[in-house]
Length: 166
Image 1 (cartoon, rainbow, N blue to C red):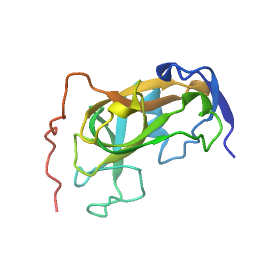
Image 2 (image 1 turned 90 degrees about the horizontal axis):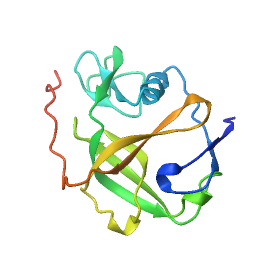
Image 3 (image 1 turned 120 degrees about the horizontal axis):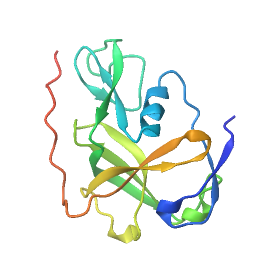
């Protein structure tokens, strides 16, 4: 069972809270290690160069099992979102209302991360707005990647990536 870790949701302007800390495994440890270093890294197939999240045992595009991690820009577009007025897990009471979004990364269409959205006014959120990753330290040395609006950028341009083979 995951231990509760106290954190200060400073980016949300709230008081101290207690949240569940991640429990990395061999598939997710590179993601969390990159986050500790303030980088966003996504699992990448070494055969066809496709990105995928969440990580898995094999490439969802070509079926290869040679997988690694690759740093990405941390830029994305809001694909979908909801605003929770109720805390369903411990530690989020002081962060309400909590905006939660599905962020599609600019590197590859279809690669999406579920994330907290750090916004002052959730009513200003719109599908398609440009977002950028930000990092919030939490307990035990972990750092939580989250997303915030990218000021002055209506919609992010797709980053050119090599076409997958096969």
